[in-house]
Image (cartoon, rainbow, N blue to C red; front, side, top):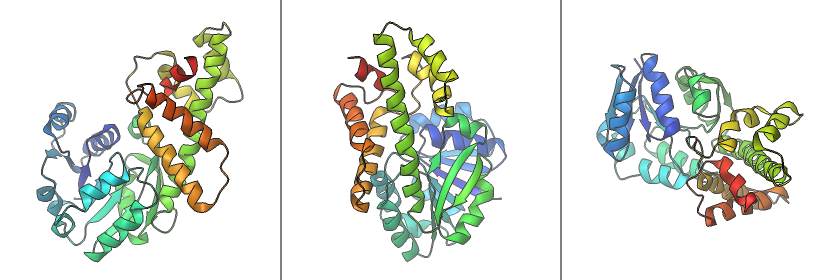
Amino acid sequence: MTNVLIVGAGKMGSAIAKELAADGVSVTMWNRTAEKLEALKVEITAPSFNTSTDLKTAVPSADIIITFLTSGTIVEEVLLAPGLLEACKKSAIIVDMSTSGVDTPHILKKAIAAVGLRYVDAPVSGSMATIASHQLLVMASGDASAIEEVTPTLMKFSKKVANLGAAGNGQVMKLAVNLIVHTLNAAIAESLAIATAGGISIDAAYDILEESVVAAPFLKYKRGAFTNPDVPVAMRIDTVLKDMNLISALGDRLGLPLVSTPAVQEAYAQAVAQGLSAKDMARLLETFQK
């Protein structure tokens, strides 16, 4: 049996743990603090699910180690802690599914290869809902044999695992996807601000958007977040700003004259400055309404 260790008990990592455990996969969830883990043990009752707050004692039994953390800096801090990689079994494969940016994959690849392990850079496109429906898109890059070996496990909650080549390519593609997602989110927010300021109710405006040529899946499933400020947070505004900063830096590195990125980046920066950091990305609407 494949033993999977998920590093990070955030929304996405927890959703993956739930699907794997439901399929009978042996899953251990690690988190720095026990509070989130205690809540998960109530939610995930499968006998194959375990938790740990001691990563160094959890890694030796793991065949696949999946990291799903907030940033590349945190991924590096956790995985490159003294002695951690050396504590892994030599056949273990480390899969980073975080949006880590383009520098982290190269740092991790070098450090992981130095101890004889294999690494897959595998950010995703989707949400908790797409994990639950097994429709997550995985943008994998790195060791080809490792990607092939982890694919059956990843397909238990995904619709496709795309092999994009060398480590780091997955992060490049993820940032390209997120540029559209975050720009579309900003466009919807600005559109609704114009419509409501002009006297149209937000529900009536959203009805029209859903029937128009711009009715992308993202627009449809974010309706609740745009029309009701009290729905649970799916992606925080400060996380979106982190992504936009990574996108901007990548554009500079590649020498690309990005046009929409600076404006969208500034909009999310304003939202953070207005105290909306912890709000769902759809609440960018409030920035345009002020």
